[in-house]
Structures are given as C-alpha cells and as structure tokens.
Length: 88
Image (cartoon, one colour):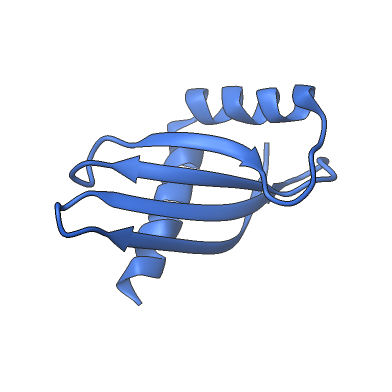
C-alpha cells in the first residue's frame, strides 16, 4: 500500500504528552484518511484512524488499519511527519 502524506501537525502539552494529526491518501482509495496520534512521552503511540472528509468504504478503512498495524515503517512515517511538523 502506498501512502501519500498531505498535512500534518503535532502539539506537545505541558504534561509532556503529544497529540497530532496526519492527513493522507492511499493509492487506489477514493477518500482521504486522517490519523490522530497520541503518546504520553513520545515513545509509544496510540492512534485513531478515520476518514478525513466524507465517509467511505468500511473495507477500505479496515485494510488501511490492518496495513498500519503490520507495517512499522508506514506507521513510523506518519509519526515522523507529525513530529517534523511540530519542529517547524
């Protein structure tokens, strides 16, 4: 699966936790996705995946979620995009 990262942002809170969002597209999928990332200390990340604009196929979003669970490099690319946006 090929991801095309659009916009990204990350905020660090006073307690040291991070919350960020990344919008991206997946080759062959008509709708864009947004992932919300959360970490208490910037090391282990939890996330929520949803459609960025309008709802789409449940099969598509399930496939993207399974892909992100299995492909550490793809998930890390989304985290790195958000962290890079924070650094700006």
